[in-house]
Image (cartoon, rainbow, N blue to C red; front, top):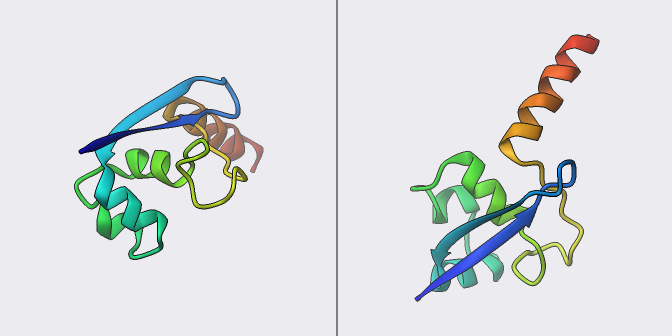
Length: 83
């Protein structure tokens, strides 16, 4: 069975979704392993969606902060320009 995980970018408010195996995700939510080990087939950007998912699919009780790939790259570029 699969599950759709969504995360909302805190900058542009774009919703990003990812489909994962529900049983593996449940094990991740129960802290049975690290995201990079349990979802090693996913890219780091995809794993960030799992880490920063919108409720109820996160481990941080809604305290996550997600930036989509485009906003992340822009933010890092701007940070580099400030140095």
